[in-house]
Length: 111
Image (cartoon, rainbow, N blue to C red; front, side):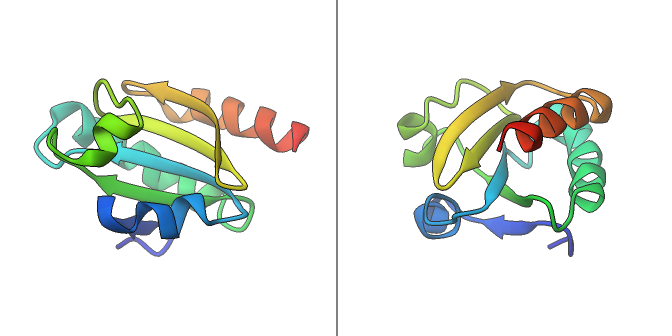
């Protein structure tokens, strides 16, 4: 685990993500995905930049996980943005740091 984000499993997703009152960004990824390997350094860097202003979580999934069907994850990586346990936004596919920063800043301004 990086010290700037928490590791979440599909089994403890409800406890760690949905029961959180924080602004939380969950990186839904798969270890074998090349796109996720590209996304990972961007996610880690942005999690360090916004540490203390948002909670960041990485969730490794497989296509068989109930979490994938329950949350309509059509591909990885997918970033799910939560506030008070409710999904408020999502981004599918690779997103670079500057675009992710703009999205986070917009959410922080509103909330």
